[in-house]
Amino acid sequence: MQHILETLIKQNRTCRRFDEQTPVEALQIKRWLNVIRYTASMRNAQPLKYIIVTDPEECNQITALQHWAAMLPDWDGPAVGERPRAYLIQLLDTTLAPSGRFDEGLQLQALGLLATDAGYGMCIFHGYGKGDIARMYNLPTHLSINAVIALGKPAETIVLEEARNPEEVKYWRDEEGRHHVPKRPLEELIVEPHKPSLF
Image (tube, rainbow, N blue to C red; front, side, top):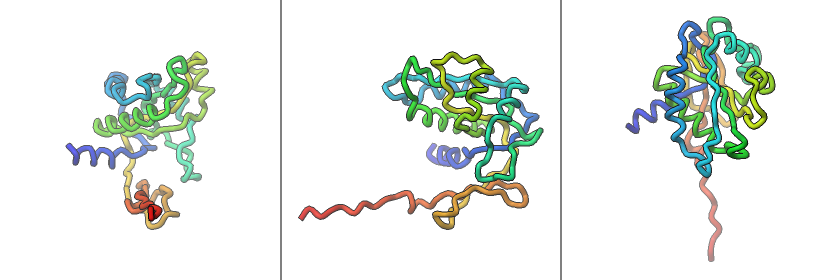
């Protein structure tokens, strides 16, 4: 089980190009949501809700609103044939809690692992075009957009590699279009505190 989880975590990468010919069924997404509702929730408030978007026209409208890769300034986002086939709009119900801190990340990570396990990929956005999306779905004021999640069958190769130095952590693409993601080495994550002497 440990090996399977480690593999899923490493495979669960941000995907920005999808196989547009392969749909993501709403029923599949509902299965994932039925699982992630069991994640921990601060004060057990469970304030997060979701809009499932599978209509191609609506998906294309949301795709056009997103900023796809800050570190690839010459890339305008997925081309026709590479666009997401579904979206989830993560909402905070402010009648249940003033924020979804921790809940948001826990559910998004769990969703990513479930999607990866089923052979799908996703890209999480802070929610560019929140106002436009809220108007698209006539959202009441107590439902605020936390995140926009693109979903689809991956159509790109992602390569994990060790970062050579602290300054070189920007993702990049090689001549074959493979997406490289440098990760900081374990030694950079662990802080050894200098404990003051008691004597």
